[in-house]
Amino acid sequence: MKVKKAVIPAAGLGTRMLPTSKATPKEMINIVDKPAIQYLVEEVVASGIEDILIITSRGKSTIEDHFDRSPELEQKLVRARREKELNEMVKISHMANIHFVRQQEILGLGHAVYHAKSFVGDEPFAVLYGDDVIFGGNVPACLELCREYENYGLGVVGIKTVTPQDLTRYSSVKILPIGNKVFQITDMIEKPPKGQEFSNYAILGRCVLPPNIFDMLEITQPGAGGEIQLTDAMKNLAKTDTMIGVDFSGKRYDTGNKLGVIQANVEIALKHPEIGGDFREYLIELAKHL
Image (cartoon, rainbow, N blue to C red; front, side, top):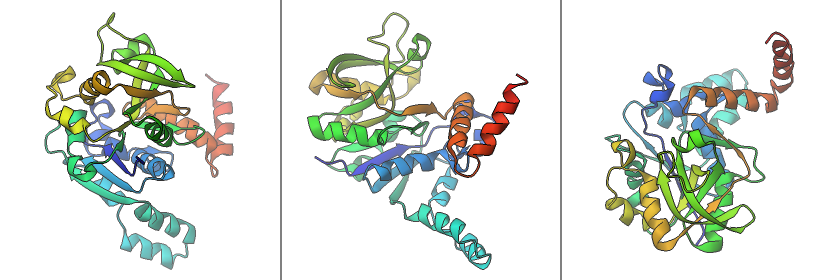
């Protein structure tokens, strides 16, 4: 079945990005000239999906504002004859059919995704974690996963190798190679204690799930951090039906922490059509004094 819907959980408190995230949603922190969440929406649209649910929470209304029309701004751009900027602003609100729902209590990623049950219905859906921006692949990472869902009819997760230290912050999956950068997954563990890892592959930022994940979320008990973890529900799915893992081709940036945001800004700025050349010269000169 073709994947036609996507869910972007963006309700977390963003404590790793304090003090910026105290009043500004971490998903709205800029990467050069666009908020991080816009890159996720653009990835979804580039993957052929037009129906998107963004899960927010209190204090995150600026996310909704960003994807809405702004008549006052548009009129000002019209009067100033700034047609390029005007077209860009209008395009943002027309990219996709974007819906919003609030997670009233921040009880974990699994709890957030469960809020998408009525939106999803009886269809498969993509999930793009709000902290994970991926650039530079041969095709969008979301599309890579959607294609494998259509090939196998099984839940799919995006995976990458990470350091042993990072495994304890993310997850570890039990894998069996079945194709080029494609794996069968039969088990997984969230934030594994040292010595309990299945492999050095972790789930990073993307998954495509069948609708029966909601049945599993309903019976999932609080896990790591006292939260309802999506990984725990997917573990049940993997052990019951098996899942597919895709070592996606792009580079993933953790925009939920300060270093990840800086890395994304530097590398995207170098490719930016307006400032890339000047920024490269600046870095070269700066590096002489490091």
